[in-house]
Image 1 (cartoon, one colour):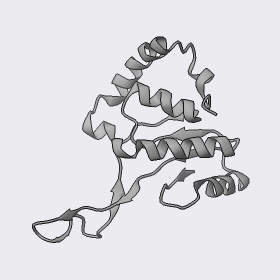
Image 2: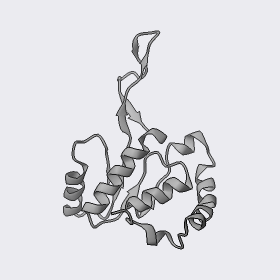
Image 3: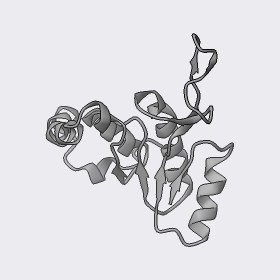
Length: 139
């Protein structure tokens, strides 16, 4: 189940999903955002608000992955603003069992390839032998 960050208590929703039989959770979907065309004096998108994603939401996603992974016992897939191998490691340290790259692929179509290639180098620099060893390491 992919959960939206546009809620006041992500943990209670995650726990309800787990209790209802979810196998795992993906955090987070896009945040609700808005832009205004100041020349035309109206919203940029026709329905006024829409999905906000990319690098700017990474700290929110990381926080929610941390909260939910420490409150639930099912796997959590972390996503939201992931753009580098360091982001992958950070997401996993927060508690993600796997990581998804989304908006960064729109900016750089080679993002996933570059992240996969950079991951072993980043792991070596940090003394990480296996990604399994760092899942949820931040308590």
